[in-house]
Amino acid sequence: MDTSKLRVNGARLRASLEEMAKIGATPGGGVQRLTLSDEDRRARDLLVKWLKEIDFSVSIDEMGNIFGRTAGKDDALPPVMTGSHVDSQPKGGRFDGILGVMGALEVMRTLHENKVQTEHPLILVDWTNEEGSRFAPAMVSSGVWAGALQRDWVYARTDKDGKVFGEELQRIGYKGTIPAKKWPAHAYFEYHIEQGPMLERQGTTIGAPKGILCLHWYDVYLEGEANQVGPTPMEGRKDALCAAAEMILAVNTLPDRMKGNMVATVGEIQNYPNSRNIIPDKVHFTVDIRSWDDDHALKAWDLLKKDFTDIAGRRRTPIRIEETWRVAHAPFNEKLVQRVLDTAKELGYSHLHMVSGAGHDASYMNQVCPTAMIFVPSIGGRSHVEVENTKWEDCEAGANVLLHALLKTANER
Ligand code: GLV
Ligand code: MN
Ligand code: MN
Picture 1 (cartoon, rainbow, N blue to C red):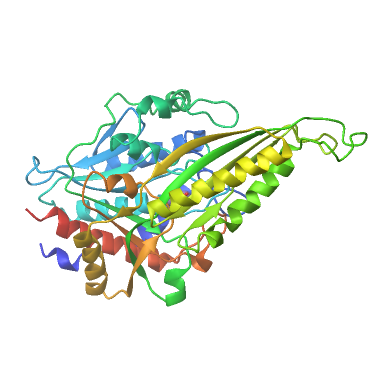
Picture 2 (tube, helix red, strand yellow):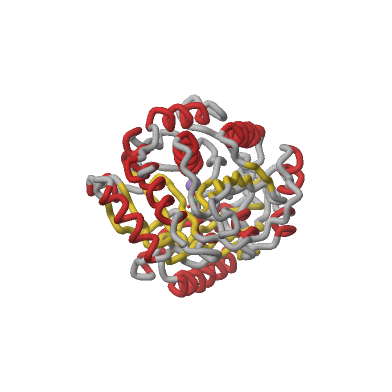
């Protein structure tokens, strides 16, 4: 058949997204589907059921990554892969990650009902723990699959209640037996919401990022001395929270001091014993630094580490730093990025060449095979929040771009 006329079913895509949004729905209109939670399990079960309905063979690897596969005309060719993640942030949105999985599913359903078989096999993937907010760091299971992270290191990561990644994976029934180990892949496409304001500001429907910023994550632990706040004079206190406060502002001013080209954020903090009338004696907080320039981000970290040491010394609060995770900036395959732009143009959608500030499994996939992403606008540029939203017609447009970029790629010899 002439596949150039094929289009996805936007109403069916919307219905799938709405069905998924019921799993972990929050009162504020978002979802909370933390990785390896019962909600994550329910979303996975539904995805597996839907994949089986279109005759995909489903396999689960030892990281819990779910792969749905359909044969190619030449099944010995390396597969074209596409997908994203079903886990969410705490009080996250209804589109981050799940759009890339449901969009890919809609593409596969469209091909299935039209009996279209591509030359290369196709694989739809759900990567475990993209978000990294329950178990840091992020994107760990594409990282293990790509050979960039160690499986047992990830298994041993704990959440803030002390639960262990490997045990939680087992508990939800998704610790598969297949090794999480890359195989040759022809290409990887990841469809995602932009999570920023650029597309909306420019009135553009489709974004094709040239790549993803580097991501560097750190964990900082401070020790103070607890005491009754009333009788203890201000002089001589060892207040771990005050030290953290100074450090957090040092993070916030870091991009300015580095003359831009980066962002830096403290998003998580634990303060102990967290009582209004006890001087805090233990604080943990996180640092997230991102830039297109890996060296620039490393230089920024050197400067920040010096600030931290000075502050900790002055406030007499011993500091311990964990350099938790670094993933280099990921410049995508130019041919595939151009293919996304060309496909958008052919389908009559406005398009923009841009950069991704958000992290994605595509960062690690880029180390394995030619990779590109497809972005659609986030209303108000908001994401990782319950009000995260994208117009249904944009969801459909992005899925159509995925469909045709995938068809072109999976039919090349
Ligand atoms: C992933 O969600 C990120 O932190 O960008
Ligand atoms: Mn995401
Ligand atoms: Mn996210």
